Image 1: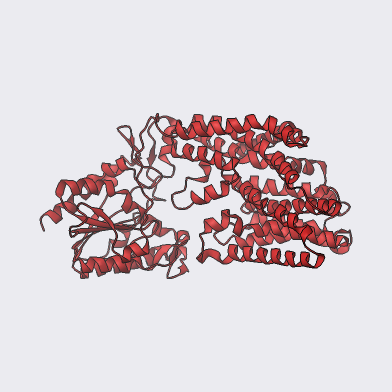
Image 2: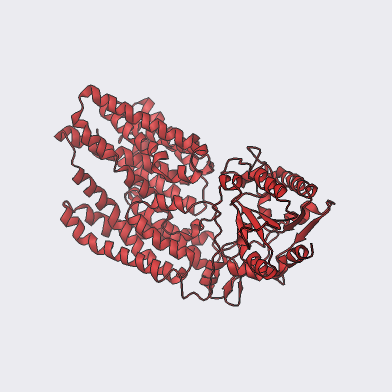
Length: 631
């Protein structure tokens, strides 16, 4: 096994440039550079452990973790500390800054992937506002470092034959990890499969098995016509997938192609091959050498640049992107030269921890300051956040455990049903409930419209509707209010219909049919149905933009995202006992969406009302309550 393979530096360069260009929206498949890194990491770490094991008969776990810490932590800590300053100046006292401050701690403790998995999903803060989002990959690798040395530590206790059995078990674990990644959507969420080690370690184990293969069959890595051909094809294929593959919830197949091509490259590319010489050219190797720092720095630079372009009203042009690439490479070079290289010379724990300790201390202090002092408080505009994430389960529906308005023990006179937008208006309904003394219930499921057969593409088709319709019929409820992000029904990428993906051209007609079916069913049961149109949707997060601009954010209403689904779906329909409520007059002035009123933010993201936003549209629901008072 060769001591140092310069062509792998070239492969690192390809991987990191793919990721960088992807995040600049200059390619569609560069995210697969992360998968290349996983294989390279598994291969290099395993190769070094094999060498140590063969020369000494054992491995030193202490030395292993020392090498990992001095490789990863110094540049990471410096990146975190420097990123904190501009991000605090731009976005302190916002939910985005609160999450950033928390992510500092998770990055230091190597659990970023768990943190971002927990914070992923429907209510996740946009990636553009998470400077440390990319550290999830470091969490994966660092958790893998708990597994790989353990295998080598127990290896001496196995005979040669039993060692082969051990590798078979590891291979089975690799296959199971891949299968969970590809077919685990019925067991775990897409976010879990993307962010978590159990469904990602197959890529790192692929690198381990390539190292094992070349240890046992080093002749595979010799130059001949076959290896030349395979080597060239593999690197061309990797470049091809960067510009042709597109990410989606079934990302595993794309990752598999990237992993296989990387494995073929590592096995077949030699230092004397044409591809090997090309990948060992000094400019390419230079980018490969600084690839770790480039990966660390590129995303914070992109995020902060994005915020600055908004703050100073600068067009995010190709020139800006070129400047980002140049500044990223330059800062990465400085990080590599003055941080990475010096720490590689620290060969003992004391030599490493002594200069590292101040950086760790500063990072912790900044995180605590960010969480305790700079996350909430002195903002120009007050944000009263709603508890939007609904906690009702299907069992709650079956057991009739719904949210209540007024006296929980009294029979409900009205029933509110919908997605998280139904939860968002609850503060307004609470005020009117107190005023009129009318009791009600609410059934809301995040991301799920109150229609049959249409549901979030990440969820199973659970029959929530059957349960609340049964409840309405059983309790003879005569007033039903439907509230949802109806405009979402135009976006086929987020929905499923009868366990099938919806084609974009069918989305409106399918949603219209199911809406009319639901309205007719409810009215035939004797209910009067009130439907609230979607609240106006913004393109940009008003909490962030108002903080950046230091003035209330106002945005022109866009017909591209505000489709007015309810009006279009019902304009030629004649269904008795249906009433339409519109929040638009309370949130739009002169064609502009108002996000701040009397110093209070009306939205907490682009489409969900805050508590004050719900209060602002309270009068929308007065006819609903007035009608019940006279029944």
